[in-house]
Amino acid sequence: MKEVLNVAKEKMEKTLKVLGSDFAAIRAGRANPAVLDRITVDYYGTPTPIQQMAAISVSDARILVIQPWDKSTLKSIEKAIQASDLGINPANDGTVIRLTFPQLTEERRKELSKDIKKLGEEAKVAIRSIRRDANDKIKTMKKNSEITEDDVKNFDKDIQKLTDKYVGFIDDAVSAKEKEIMSI
Image (cartoon, rainbow, N blue to C red; front, side, top):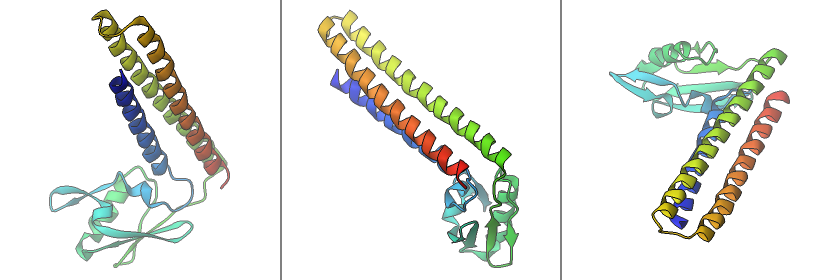
């Protein structure tokens, strides 16, 4: 029974990490190297993350500087950024690529806020699905007479507490990210 609870907790933890990385990829008008996490560059036939090909630094609140270790990859990094859904045109000066993040419009902020709420809701659905799977395992154990009715009731309380705790974490993360988006 403890094992089922631990597995559920582990899965909920992973769900929270995925939400965190999804939030990091949402650009908030500030330069954040995490927006490049999902962009890969064709490097000698292998899709390679930009972080493995270049030094990425924030030179200004809204400027990201990408300095490739191999200068011959400048063009391919630039093309990968243009092909991505980032919506920023890279400026290539021959040695580094600069990404200037524009200030967000009010309309774009509201759009991002909706996306954040949607991601939060998807994470909550995942948490509830994990709870349902754990409850199903416990019911199967009860049916096979491996545990008692009292064990089932105690487990139900424990899994609900765990679910409420992680849903609370998600709500906190959503409101923090919304605040960040709206306060720029």
